[in-house]
Length: 271
Ligand SMILES: C[S@@+](CC[C@H](N)C(=O)[O-])C[C@H]1O[C@@H](n2cnc3c(N)ncnc32)[C@H](O)[C@@H]1O
Image (cartoon, rainbow, N blue to C red):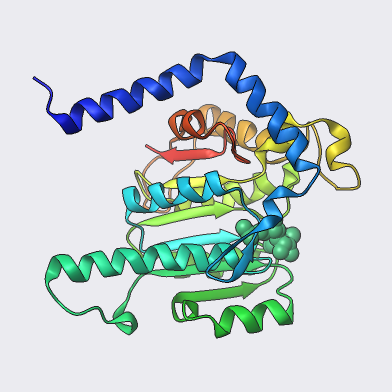
């Protein structure tokens, strides 16, 4: 006999399964995504005062993943205005708050071990100043350099080795070659049952003229890189930083419930 909580969860799972089969609502979502992208919709939002370049649906999904995974390190490539770093840091702050409540001790923000590590090839001075002035800055570290530069990768690996539960978000240069190199460098750092989220895989599903003037486009974008990396994992195999085989699964439940997302095929769970 199911209790109330189980039956609610079952209902939600059925809703999501229904959405995953509903080609009409999927087509509508694609049309909406195509039309809204012309307005740079993702630029419209901010998190605790810092602009971020995300869809609210993906922000909601990140909150669910952070609660599920309980990471102590979030690695993000692509900082821009810093809003996504601030969002990740604030979600880690909430985990610290919950830990303190559960332990029955006062929250001590400076005692946290949970941190965000951002990497960007060009951290503009005005953005750096604003990020460093933010109340969440005490748990944010930033590296300026290309996310695929060997010295940057070495530094990130060193830092990550001191953490238990690592979540990775890839949102920098969106070419196939760059994202594939990022996946090779950072996917092995993802802890078991944690995620590597690859943003802007949506480029593959959009009309070519929407992304003209960029080095990426249809056939050359984060989604094609994800497909290639998953193929390489299957055919050649890779080892995680923890020394065990790396296996990533496309989490279709997250994509299925969001429908509106910049990361179709981009929510990769390490299993
Ligand atoms: C889409 S924005 C990041 C948005 C941010 N994650 C957010 O949600 O607000 C892309 C960023 O990637 C950075 N970038 C471009 N090429 C890069 C590279 N090779 N390595 C690291 N960052 C890079 C750009 O400077 C830019 O700030």
